[in-house]
Picture: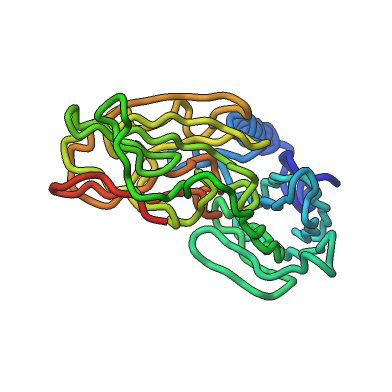
Length: 304
């Protein structure tokens, strides 16, 4: 059975008397509606809706080729996942056993499981108890390409003022104008496919860090270059809503479709540490976020 859609794990239907089956069909319909509301088949669950538990498997790719597949055993059923994003809805408390199968074992062997939130396992076969929305990703060895020297300046060069304006270019992604106290960030999702496409401007898991003084205006010019929908929202490390009014792309859990753009502007009104994160389920946990720090003074900076 292919992943990517809802499935009822186990064959326990007969345990329920006929008088209870209409209610169970209602719950199943609610679960399906939540699945259809998500991105790529991901269910949206919350204490308010009471929608059940699920496992989402995100399989990375190199170019257009998936780096592997995953076999899952849940309640006596076997599922074969061979898409970028695969989801099954299961009964809360069931155990799921996942096996990672490299597509290119000699060049891209399995390395570890990334498990939301913030866990990892190097065992090829992973067994876990499904007690909520769980997102996992099998990682495969994928060396970063060696940078090819060019005659153009490094994108991380020392800031240089533009000859025609007061704009200072920090790198190819970030620039600012001190006179107007504005910063512009060109946030490109899935740039050049780095980190299996779950990146902003080619960096993931906070490797890119932007700082901006308190009170400055920040414009994020978001572009989605990947094969999946993505969003870009300024949040706290544990938040799921914009940290500042207007600081996010529309429909953040659904995302902006591939090839489309979205631009928004907000005021960095509170000193602190934040993230520019993709809130499509499973993506931030897989490393799709960059650091944003609001500081008390000085000028904007970029670190990678």
